[in-house]
Image 1 (spheres, rainbow, N blue to C red):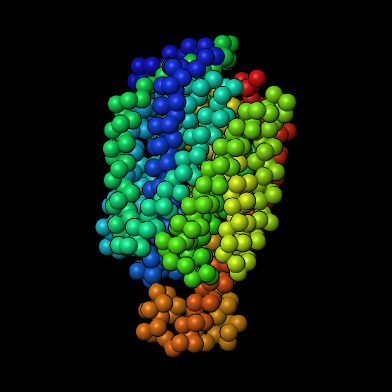
Image 2 (cartoon, helix red, strand yellow):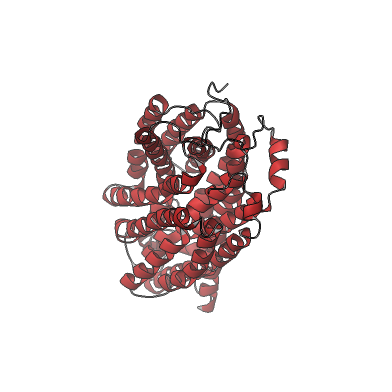
Length: 468
């Protein structure tokens, strides 16, 4: 059992300021590694698709559903353990497991082996965010939580930046396999550092005195508590809509630039994905900072900011994925990322704010269960299936001169099997199909924004403790 589990509401931050920041940085580093290992497969997507001669829907299964299924199935049981047992140990063990599985992806000899190791990564990563969110809520009082959780959420975008900054060039110089090996192994060491340096705080320490205290809740009791909180479910709906688009488009962005603009894996990673990741990090942090600054005047800022930002991001994404100019595409996507990633900290802040002390980790796990199973699991599959269908449509419009199955493989493979005209047709159909699929998907960011705006109707009523 967790030895530091006594509910001692003080309304104060736990530990010294320096140590709190160390813990927050450590947890953000863990979350950064979480996303390095999660998104790396998208960075090296096209080489994997070509080596195993995959259709886009198969890569969607590999990069999305295969990972998300076990991630979501394990998330709630692990969160339940985090409500009772030492959260630091759970996080450290999870880091070590997913890092080892990431390294093993580099030696996969088949599509099925790679899928199995990706499932292993998903099992490990399920033990990260719910206990980490619970720890942050005990280290930081309510008035500082939005900024702390927004900082933690930057791990998503920082992980994407680092996966691209290192994974792309490594894959270009060697192969996609070395990228998995090099980026997977360091996480084992980070897991050990967390285990021996991060302290387990008393549960509920930073909540205000008088905050409703409940004994440990069973899953049924947790669901009963949350069922009366419409804000919780609206937040989940918004986060799921954004994840559906974000993971679907994100896993196919590198192939898009390679197919449409003729860039190689390293060029896309360093010239496109790294700047976009930095913009996303700035968007996540800025939204958290702005929320803390204006919440005393606008109590619903935590939902208003991501709501309007997501809606405004849609035209910038449309332009970015439509124009022929790479610099203009990058400029448009930078603005889109800056706006859309404002939701990252908000999803956790709202989730934490409406859940009682003893149900926070499980509340986050429920949110991640839905958002990841539908968003991460189905988003890449949706974009992949739509891309394949639209590619077939493109080929049919060209008088059906090439069967879709004949377009699988690299350009050199196609050249060995098809005539020059047919190779060109295949490559153009691949690019056009994926482009149209992405444009259809990014429109759904507006739906996510609308759902966050709807959170404002019930947010103040459902909060357990007000920030100010």
